[in-house]
Amino acid sequence: MKNQVVKFILVGIFNTILGIFTMFSFYNFFGWGYWGSSATSYTLGSIISFFLNKSFTFKNQDSYLFTGIKFTVNIGICYFAAYLIAKPLVRYLLLEMDYSFTLSIIEQLAMLVGMVLFTGLNFFGQKLYVFGQKGEHNYGK
Image (cartoon, rainbow, N blue to C red; front, side, top):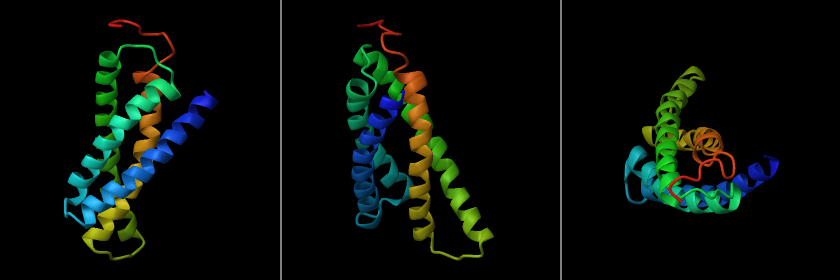
């Protein structure tokens, strides 16, 4: 599992750099807002992540269709859970610390917090649900 964590982190670093660039570009330069910019960024990153984690991180041999469906479900659940929690959490913490920020700053801080929450949830979702143990689910091959 330690080797998988290291590989997952390497894939994650690449996706994080790509994700930060695309998410904040869509938010700040194209005005796509909190949900539009984060969803677009995660869609692009998830496509890359699927192929890298299936073959490089978890060395999964299951069919692309079978794991692709599970991967999509996992990403959707992790994304919505992370970003539904992040925005109210950041807003609450800033209010508790008596800080007043613009909506733009709150949303961008929430996108960073959402990235952290998503990463943790996503690793366990991929490890336990999507890719499982090597050779555990070979149907549809």
